Image (cartoon, rainbow over all chains, first blue to last red; front, side, top):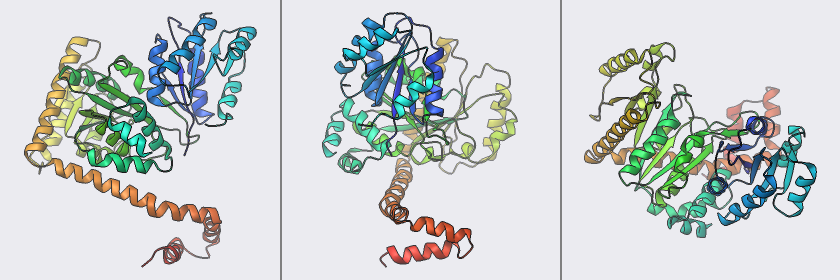
Length: 132
Length: 319
């Protein structure tokens, strides 16, 4: 049976891990998703290598540092470079709507969710995506 | 699929990762890849590590990786975490404790969810071990989910089984119960700086004095203290690794490796037969709606499960 697998990632010195932990539990308990969480203070490359080793369907990157415009394209590149072109990237964090739209437009992320949205929005998006 | 098997043989990380994912998802034709790699399996030393939730299995595994790498041997790890019985979801956190090995090419860590399997492992573990074996890992560590007294499937897959005990987990007599205690090749008393460690040590010792060891191997007890003292922690785990090697040598010298290997192949043929014979029949029964009809009949007490099973067997089994 095919089961959706997600790696939830943080990067740099971002210490705001409350919501990503809530998301991890919610995805497990409400969404039936297999969730990996790689913890705080990891580099983008470490997370990309993890994503490939785990063969996840999705990587979710949580950013509360305001650096999202720079970091998402870099994460996308790191994933591609590690051999994870087929792995989709989504974002979560303190991200203004116009930045979120810009990131999706430029192809850096498949979806970006502001932290003001209910967590269900993310769960629904993940569990109703067509599996490749 | 065969291609994936060929690439796994060369140690290609991506192929190995994909193959394990396909095994987990039971993608059709994955068996073809396993057929291809099976002749090359059986080289690695498989070490199982099991114990109650929170006993420190992941932390010990992490340090054990260091001890093994210090001897210039490569390591594969399969860490199993529980799936939710209600949604099938899982939160796999073991690897957070092992991420420091992420850029070491001699280490491959993979986490798996149980996906409803009983016994403390995932169904994918058996074939997963083969994949890590053929990718060239010298030692394969299989970390079970936190177990109770009866989840001892690890014995069917590992050459050396480590059972991790911790002081203060309630009535120490619990430890004497059958099951988990019988599968141990090495006991680890973890968090041995805590109160009750001496008592646990003595009780484990006296339990073993009552036991019989037909193979001639009496499980040693290794005390490991808190990892807050990194130096002494590393030293105890080095000692643990020596014991693990001693056990492997013992199995080898006494021609007992074969016995362990036999347990594994028995389990494998059992599983393979189940998926080749039972599952297609079950799927067919469910597809045609016969399964539901049988359930209804049973609810109305029109028949019994054994009569139904005989009928199904008469229909599908070629005598």
